[in-house]
Image 1 (cartoon, helix red, strand yellow):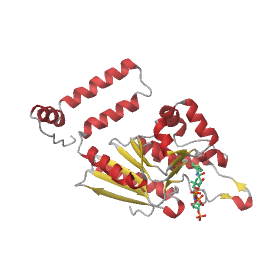
Image 2: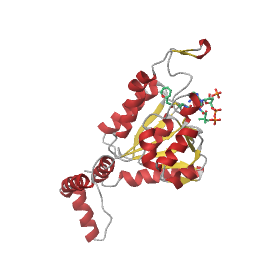
Image 3: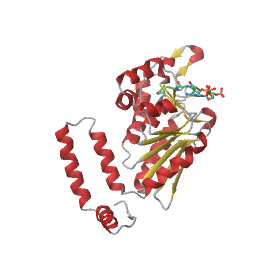
Image 4: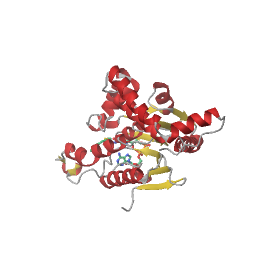
Length: 268
Ligand code: LHQ
């Protein structure tokens, strides 16, 4: 597939996949073609067995959510005719994209370079390690256009920041600064703007040589904890740990520790 709305590359001998949302003049807002391209790129990441995904935006924004000028040909503001089945749009583009991002098995580092609004904030929240530039902000913009938070925001926000803060963000729709987002636990870290890409790339490179299979199991287990009991979680950990115990990277990790050298993980 030709990518016109994103940039996609596989770097570092196949270990690191990079996706850049690339409609900077429209603040990387989402159109249907962009959603398709993103899903195609995520499939490439899986097929090519990259060990980490780095996701960021081109220009001054991360992603301003759905492109409000182009989300559906049936919406004609000038004719006051809003015959649009947004549910169908969600089924076609947004929910499959959010599900695909949520299902990425390898670690996802998200470098939030500027505003992340609406669906854009959801994409950011689906990163496993989210680093934001100090000038970035997170906005539940939906209320301003008469919609409710979507794209998984009502699922992720309360889990990340708690119900009170989730409700404050979703009902008021005010920008949350990157610094506040880090203090609230919405993201991993806020850094100075000039430090964003070096910091995100450093994390991505670190993860790209980590014991990938163990990280994938850890990520899956933490997701599963959202709906498991403590007893179920203990069993899940035992089963996955048993599998990991038979793998190369466990042998390598312990051998390297005993020999006081750096481990060389192959991610298998
Ligand atoms: C945009 C957008 C944008 C198009 C800036 N679209 N052009 C909803 C509906 C339907 C289907 C399913 O899903 C959804 C889920 C959602 O994501 S709903 C939420 C949609 N997003 C928003 O409501 C955010 C709208 N944008 C804003 O509030 C502001 O632009 C933010 C706060 C993001 C940035 O503000 P500023 O830094 O002041 O930039 P700006 O407003 O001047 O925007 C710069 C340009 O980007 C401008 O174009 P222009 O040609 O005038 O320079 C904007 O029109 C365009 N742009 N967001 N979502």
